[in-house]
Length: 380
Image (tube, rainbow, N blue to C red):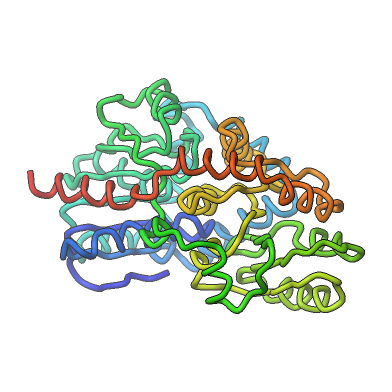
């Protein structure tokens, strides 16, 4: 995603398209800033790198988490230590990033921001290095988009961190960042997710049947065992409705449409959508991978969720948090999804309990709170 506005901006919001959540968090903060009238730009940091670096950065991440998730999990846990700033690994990574992001300095000179906010760790490393060398005086805030602050995110020259939970704040402080420069705001989602519409009303608006409804989400890149979950309903006699979102995976959308046509239950298949808030309102239960942004949006809607196929690392930590808080159940056997989804939907007490837990830990106004913090910093 390129800049929404060119030229100078009071607030420069930097993200990276290695995972759709970082982009959505940036857009959420931009939406929350809009009523203030403060000029702002939303920029994909990867647009400031070479085409080869950009392709490699995004493709390597997607390929790794899809084809070798255990390997990604190993690297994630192995790297979650605070290295010495002069370690060979840190110096090599920083040199490589700087070599492939020379236009980044030009962006800063062009935008002349009064404050910078990052929703991905790639620009944080570059900015912290510039600040440490005395080449940048602009205050930098960071928004960590998962419940656990991995060491990749933590750089000593960043002024302030916004985290999801009290536990995340504690973990960040234990890794050496000053506690007085950490705020527990929650993960920012678009303010539209703070508004809740009754499920029956949402279903009527979307033209969905008035039945218990399960929303199946595959994430922005269209990953996860969607076909297996749909196929499990081949012999189902349940009186329910399935709504599936395939994201940007056109092949998955096509295959799921063909599969849905043969099922004995009502199924609606979408590709990439812009009305996720309405689809969530229409659902009684949402099945999703435990990405930080998607699960935060679901919490804001106060919906119970069933978590499937977490990527080892950040998604596994998100999953454990949601299970501990009682806002979710874990769907292990996707080949038997129909059985478990029908079972959970029919348990009204459990569904209400999960919904209440989701509302209790949700922070739907996180984007507004972060925007307010930026504006306060600007007015000092």
